[in-house]
Length: 248
Image (cartoon, rainbow, N blue to C red):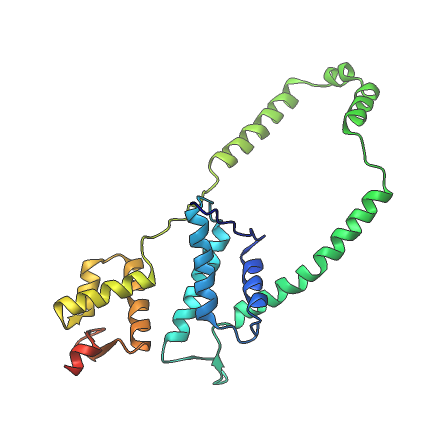
C-alpha cells in the first residue's frame, strides 16, 4: 500500500515560520531556534523528496536560521557598545513582526479589491484595441518614419538585448552536508581512531563549507556532552575525544 504525502505550500519563508509559531503556540519574542530550525529544514527536505524546486529565499532563510543557531551555541555572547548582550534572534523577530503586520491587512485589501471589481466595469481588451486601430491612421504614422528614427530604435533594441544577455545569473548550490550527518561522522571517527585533532577533519575535507559544518557539529556534540575538547599548542589547535573513552 502506498501513501501520498500532501504538504501545504506557503507564500514565502516567513509565512512558513509564522505557521510553525502559531501551530505550536510559541512566543514570537522568545523563539526556540533549535526546534523551529529543525521544522523548517524538515519541510524543505520533504519538498525535495517530492521533486518540488525549493525557492532561493527559503534556502536563504534556512541558512540564516542555522547561523542564528550556531551563534546561540557559542559560549561567548555578542555585546553591543553599551555592554548589553545581543540576542542573535532579534533581527529575525523584527522581520517576522513586520511580515505579520502586513499579512494581517492582506485579506482586508483583497476584500476591498473584490468590492471595487464588482463596482467598476471590466474592460474588454479586444474591443479597446480594435477601437484604437480604427482611430489611428497607421499609414500616416509610417510617413513620418525616417532612417534616423529606425536606426535609433534599432540601437535601443540592441542595447536592451545586450543588457539582458549579460545580466548576472545566480545559482544556488546545495552542499552534500548536514549537521546530523557530520555529528555521526565525527563520532564514528572518534570511536575508530580515538583522540583526534581538529586539523585532521580539515585535511579530510578542506573546503570551507565542510569546515563550517564540522565546527557546528562539534559545538552540538559538546553541548550534548558526547565529546570533550583538549586545547593543544599552536593557533586553533585542539583535540577531540569521546566522553565514554575519557571515562574508561
